[in-house]
Amino acid sequence: MTVMAFFWLTNGVDPYRSCLFKFASHYPPNRAATSSCLHSHRLCRLRRSGNCCSIIASRGGYRTDCPAERKELKGTGMAPMRDTTADSALNASLGSHLLNDYQQNFPLCPAPFAELAVKLGVAETAVLRKLEQLRREGRIARVGAVFAPKRIGASTLAAMAVPADKLAVVAEAINRFPEVTHNYEREHRYNHWFVVTAGSEGRLQAALGAIEQSTGYPLLRLPLLREYLFDPGMTHDSPSSAVPSAPTVLDEIERRLVMALQEGLPLFIRPFSVLASRVGCEENDVLERIRQWSAEGVIKRFGVVVRPQTLAAQGDALLVHDVPDADVLRLGNLLARAPGVSLCYQRPRVLPEWPYNLFCAVRGADHDEVRRNIADLRQRLKLTDCPFDILFALSRTATAA
Image (cartoon, rainbow, N blue to C red; front, side, top):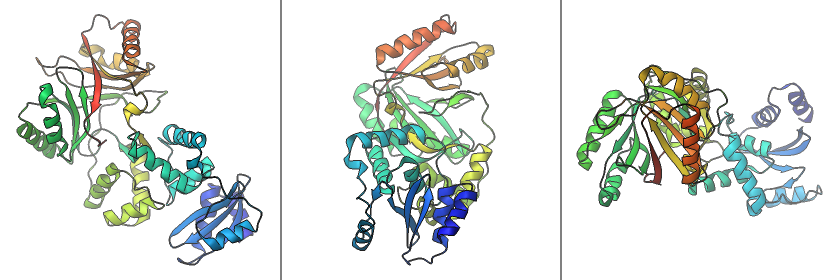
């Protein structure tokens, strides 16, 4: 077994994954087995239990809940692995790595959290616990797919002008609709903003009509016309602009998979297996479909989805301009390259209520810094003659994303 492991490590494309899963495939489920292999100069011991394969020891120590394994590993001279979740400094470092390094390039394999654990030098359980903690704290929305706008189904940004004393009641009514996500209160006459998504344009319009009827307030409908930068929490070196492509036609299995992916991966050692059981297909089918959608651009990225306010706790503003239609493309690409800008897109004017057609999100440490950044941005891009408005986010009124 050791010789075979060295062969995979020296010739395999992905050393850890090859060793881990090729080793596991040689043993039937429910049969315990251990083997040692070198990976990145680290001695690892692998355990096969049921359908799961996880690291239980490394050169830095060991971790296992099994008394027999603890006894065996103690006899090797190894010390117990330090619990990183009990160490505040290491715990903070782990959270930082997960938030910043794995918003993309997330492992698309049967046991992705085990692979992350190897790369980060911690136990798989530490990764799972930390992700769950970040989710509970509201710092991440989920671990999963970010779909390209309008590539699957239909969606629109929507806003309402709601009296302040009615806002909580209206927010509660809107939150009952499963189609509603990204629900915010903003500092503006149009103070309630949210995104509505549906499986088709017909269903989208039906949902919008039902929301208006339920709340008693008219909606401002602002569908995406062109994106210049779309990916909350991500850093972009080469912004691009594109008109949304035609929606992808889905079969029933794919439709169920999209719905499951929008909820996020279950924080479980075999998350894609769990998704497959929910959808009604095989684990390999789920992984292959995600890879295909990623290659086709249907999925923009797959990884940790950070809530926008996580990266700028005090400053988050929607900056809107009314620019000449002939200048939208040029100015949109310039805004997308500007420091501190995280979203940039063109949406329609809705006259006379809404005269703005170019949107971007600007962040800073606090409102004063955001205002300074906006003033500098408008000066540098010669936007000072264009009408504009600033809508600061006051609170999140829904937890969906």
